[in-house]
Amino acid sequence: MNVIIIEDEKLSAEHLATMIHRVDASIEVVHYFDSVKSAVKGLANGVSADLLFVDIHLADGLSFEIFSKVEVETPIIFTTAYDQYAIKAFKWNSIDYLLKPIGIEELRTAIEKYHRYSGRPQTTVLDNLSLAYQQLSKSYKSRFLVKSGQTIDSIKVEDILHFQTQDSVTFLVIANGKRYPIDYTLEQLEALVSPADFFRINRKILVRISSIEKVSTHFNNRLHITAKYVEGEMAIVSRERVQGFKLWLDH
Image 1 (cartoon, helix red, strand yellow):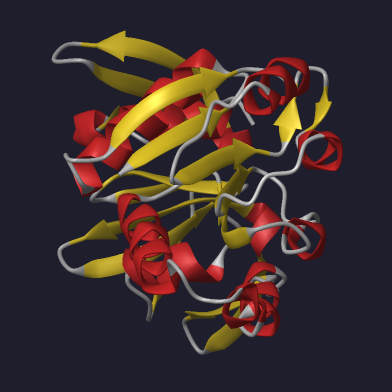
Image 2 (spheres, rainbow, N blue to C red; image 1 turned 180 degrees about the horizontal axis):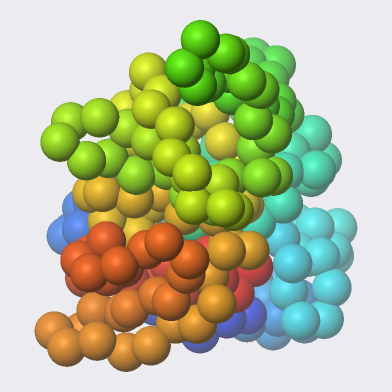
């Protein structure tokens, strides 16, 4: 199986290619395009593949322009940091719409979906549009109820610096350093808060982007963050999360 990646950020393109090979080592990336102009020229001249991975925001415009200028029947998996283009994306040969930073399991599911839909009418894909859009446009939690003594307080998400787990208990931490235990795991919280605002840098902490004051290199190809009330190993971005963390910071 051959794929083409259309992405204007070299690091993002290389990271995506690496993830694709992790999902299926037999998949070959046969070409990269980094702009609307180069993609139109290449596709019009016969460059082809079984599947396209296409970023929506390119340096010289939106990638939808490509498909309005050259006829492409190849299935497309769109990759983007923005959810507002979901409906428009499905007007083309889209089989999935992945929001960055892309997780390995999300990518695996999208590729498996390609294999399931391969050779089927496009209406099979469009039948899934409603469900896909609902997932993309879902609302995230805006506040958490916490108990302080005999009082129940409501903490706004924008007031939370990070979530952390310690001795099998999950806490949310606010600007004054106060910690409140909550009845969620970090895995559950990743689905409840906006991925544009929070990133899980290791097994112990889910951190808010605005709370990060500095990012430094660390040994073993890891990174170290400086943030209030985050110390020791809690402040280390695990090696397997470094690339996704960099992409998240760059959005």
